[in-house]
Structures are given as structure tokens and as C-alpha cells.
Image (cartoon, rainbow, N blue to C red; front, side, top):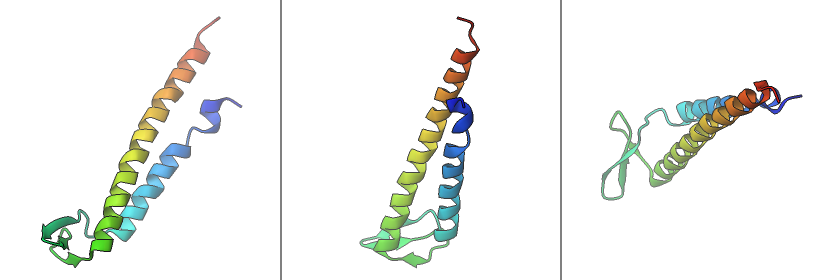
Length: 87
């Protein structure tokens, strides 16, 4: 089986699952600092430093997964384009 066919949906699925995780766990996102050692969600509700750090970790992970999905799609398109060329 061709690489592009076999792994075509893995990165989009990981991206979707990462997004769902963030929506479920961080309903008040974006969480931001709103004072010294204080953090607030979108609606102004206070969150703990641990929740803020968890949000920042998820945010970084989501960005990296999105970039990974984008570049894997570019690689897939390159592989498909190369396999379509006659030798």
C-alpha cells in the first residue's frame, strides 16, 4: 500500500482529537494573565495557575500538531505528484 494512502487520515484525526480535547477541557479559552499570579478566562472567571499552564501546554501542542498536519499534507502531495510522473 502506498504511504499516502495508508497514512492519509492520521494527522487530520490527531488534529481533530487535539481540538476536541481543548474544547472540552478549556471552555473559558483563551486563558490569559490578568494580574500578578492571577489568570482569567474569556468570561472573566478566575482560573488557577495549574489550569493556565495546562492550557498553554495544550495551545502549544495544538499549534505543533496543526503544523505537522500541514507539512504532512505537503509531503503527501509531493509523494503523489512524484508517483504520477512517468519514469
